[in-house]
Image 1 (cartoon, rainbow, N blue to C red):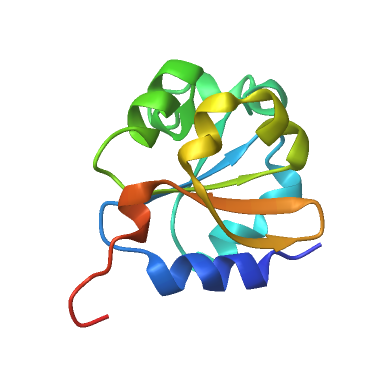
Image 2: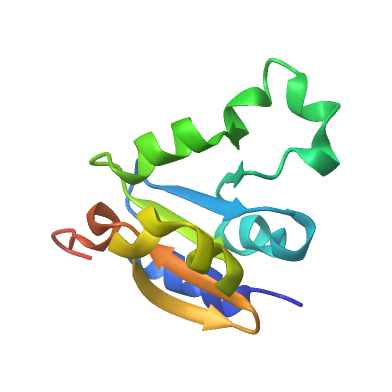
Length: 120
């Protein structure tokens, strides 16, 4: 399934310095990078990428719980694609705002991602 609609939601709000992340398995959400033409970070998604995720140049795209929480609570905008089960078991995401959904995928944004940009 393509996530073009969610990618358009991200593009409409994205500002330089914001990040896009997916929780869990990357393949079902890989079209986000194609449509947004932006890097997509992986949170809790290292299993199927175990070998490649250990290379120096790719490590920064894999977020553990600590680094993801730091980004989520920072002044940096974060767009995150999850499914309902993630929301049910991850309480700190409750300060996020759902800005879109498509099939089982839910697009959340942290508060800094929702700040308006002058002239946009």
